[in-house]
Image (tube, rainbow, N blue to C red; front, side, top):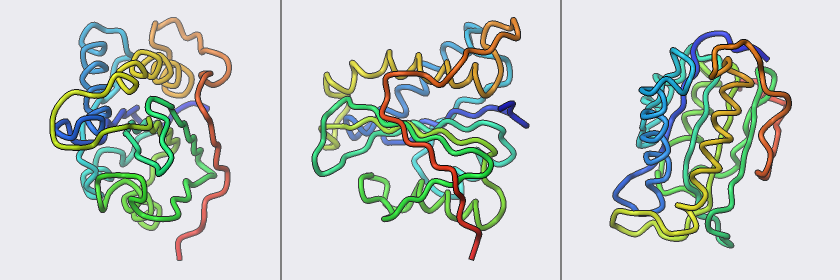
Length: 192
């Protein structure tokens, strides 16, 4: 699928809450890659605390949006990466707001609101890495830190596949990135 509009990568989280700083750390590494021209021109990399208004402003009009965040499910395996992909005809059904997040109101509410307003991204990919520690402090735990290089490769592959080639050759990588637990949602609920 070719993107219409720009590509936006959003790192969610709080860099002062240990593993919850994952999204911001990944965004920082991607910003360095963009500065070194290792990402296609025009890729926007941003950090966000999860505020619904800020998220919608960041992804409005984007062809491809990649969101990176830590999650803290009840039975966690720190460092395990989950990937959800939502196309133009699909929606991400988040059953319980902030159930596994430290953000309170945030991503789930932003997605619901942008759907209702017709301001959702054309193609959305969400990466959630299971964290172990979201206490106050800086620095991620070892399992989450070890997940970062693999996550960067997967994000780069998604940008190449859906948002344009990173090497400028026009060659797209075949198939989705491997090695993650993937869920593809294909039905979007109509706004009520």
